[in-house]
Length: 448
Image 1 (cartoon, rainbow, N blue to C red):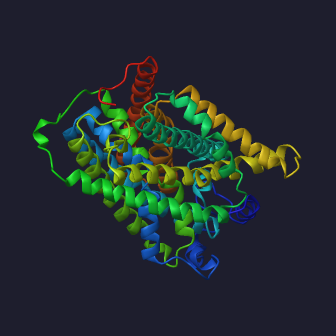
Image 2: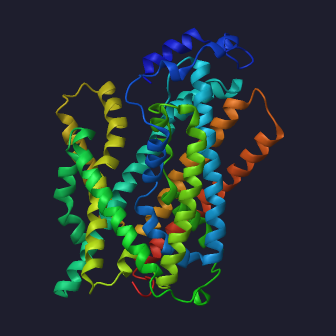
Image 3: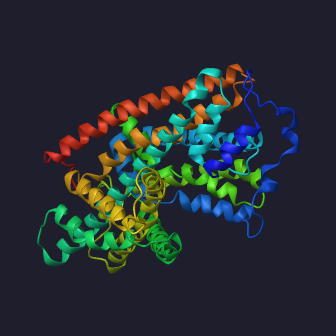
């Protein structure tokens, strides 16, 4: 929804002293779904498949190592716990966005707009902070996407490092591989339109799905005895595990864009709840099986796959290429958020957008060179960024949207979610930074 459209609708629907729109009684006559562009809208099945695919990304590859750090019993319990909370928050986000669309008489809202508009219809003292939280939401989204790009760069570099060292028996610093892939990354981020990235995304998805499927089969072959595994390790590792699990599940910024293109958007809350629970169970199973197969799992489980088998070499290459091809799509999100803001402040030539893209990927590459530890970097990203987008923002949206009809359950459940958010953010960040410093000093896990 354009800013001008929201402004127009806000002028028509003035928030009254009690927080309701002055013409709240007319809301039942406005259906945002009927005011959306009609045509090639996505079916329920198509949306469900998009939800499953959107959450199937690199995060799943780090879960066996996360199980190793926490112990499989604690990992399963915490995974179910985090998955249920996230499923609840996804449903809350979609339902509240649909309520806010009716209140403001707009056909659709994106994630940041939903946060902002929820504050505008919230309690009196929150309304002045709507714009601030809308901006903060976009900052968090950009932070998540940029660090994800850094992780993608490191994953691709480390995968090809392992293969190169196997064939030529020469050990080179990971940073050198990061530098070698820099020109390719530049080419991918210079693609001007999402449409041109679609073939790369399709090829990457095929590689990734095949790679994960082969890994599943290998994990189940010659199944080891699970009793040798650690059930529980240390308490400080739990918040970092929860952070990594959030990273694996993350797809919250795509929920509303998908809902906005559905033929039956009223079914979205049910679909997203089911998809999130299924993804949670799949990730827990993959994490456990990977840990069971490789008790000394490396940061990504693909590093443990046999290097002397051609099939597994192809799996490593295929997944690495799928991650590389995903880089351009991931990078385009912060560019589309930040560049229009720059254009509003500074009257730049549109051709300067290419320079902006190159500066951004150069910064991401420098971060990868400076901090080449993937797993603690993911933990830090999730603790600081994804905990906000997946826990804090849906909680705030829920309270601000439904404050006019408060219940004990509303405040108890959101108070509980806020407590979980604080624990993951604070202790997850501390443990990630501690691990990062330890590994930066050369202390690495055995077997990797």
